[in-house]
Image 1 (cartoon, rainbow, N blue to C red):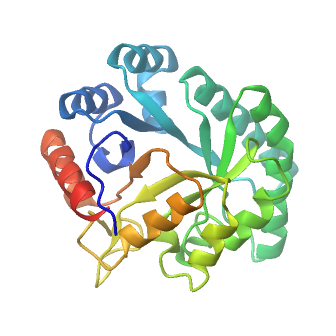
Image 2 (cartoon, rainbow, N blue to C red; image 1 turned 90 degrees about the vertical axis):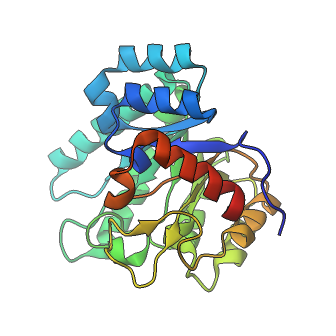
Length: 273
């Protein structure tokens, strides 16, 4: 498999350096010559949108995505309305910061009816599309591993994400391929090919064996069992040549010094991604 030899596509997903504030993460990217950053909304809230916009502009960084929108299912109509209001704010934030992609973590069921929750996701996306399009934002549906179905998302297969995305134009709704969530799927390469022209994000990490924690157990590239290069080549064959976000939930990595973490990330990116 072809090896990456430059960092021009490398993006720091902010969660990988969760201990850093947005200003600290921006400064660390600049020092490390990492050209892209993916922003999380809780970090934006800490800094403030106006200041965040100034930081990004002055740094010269490009924003690969904003995380997250979604969380559509809710127990009551009022809760669903509030979540749609928050999604519209997320769209506005993405547009202000110059991002093209709002990542959707679609949300769990509020009760035992997972089918009804999936319908709420479809209805929520349909409602959000016109507003996102009016702001120049593409919605990226990120399927999450089935182990997250009860807590974070009822969209668990790339095939589910594709089925929803195919109802819209590619500039309206696409899919995000996160290797941690999809590497195990027997239909992975078939579904990546199906998503040709609709892949709007690609996230890398690794699956550690034994898995230390369902949420906080992602590994740095090369520390696990995922065939990262094969997946990257499949994503590229499907037309995606955009930023590659390193997104890692792992307390041991979070405890590293920011510069040390980014240096390790860069090394592993070239070596394994």
